[in-house]
Length: 255
Image 1 (spheres, one colour):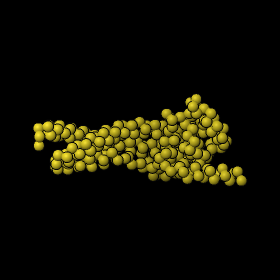
Image 2 (image 1 turned 120 degrees about the vertical axis):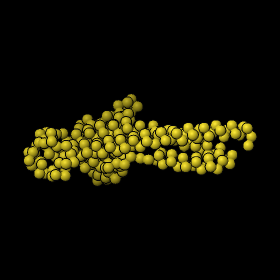
Image 3 (image 1 turned 180 degrees about the vertical axis):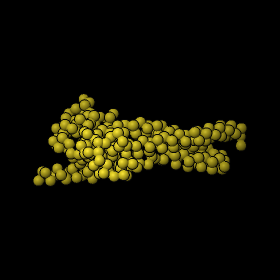
Image 4 (image 1 turned 180 degrees about the horizontal axis):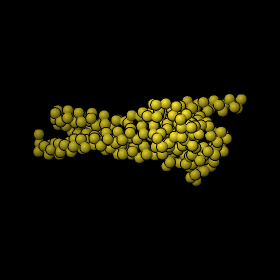
């Protein structure tokens, strides 16, 4: 092996050592970020479900509400300072879902930051592997391969969701008026989409059920792209069935 080759290998060995240290640093941080996301998601799902229950329990006397909820739901949610629920908006579950999704998006940025670092490391490891192979450094090739396997595993590590927010929204969805629906959205009023948005808004029926909600939020993308929280929520699940049901409804109406 020439002096030049030795210098090159030494340089790459230093890079490999640095990469190995960086992966060891990122792994616990990424894992912690994912666990925090899962905890936030679980807490958020409970808040949405509790909001739905509050709406159902609005106006129900405390003793009757306790009996209706049962011991499991009383233990699961925080009711001490809530019952009796005097008045509660039926749209609070939707408002909570937006707030929770915003927080989840912020946490997802943290996860993506570490994931992007891992992708850069993966690219470097590919170059390292190629260099070691060319120089018949079998032990180093094996070490790089093992590290690449670990990095790949971390890249594709995803948070586990206890339930889907879109599903929770569907469960607690109340048919609303067109104005109520629009008040929940952050409409894209940009000049580029002004005409299109007006056309979509004009076509919204006076009563909005869940299928219609999905159609205008997910299919026609009424929200501002910088604040499209409902779109993000619905993108986590298969809304195609709901959109198809809406299309069928419109076809039936046209007959």
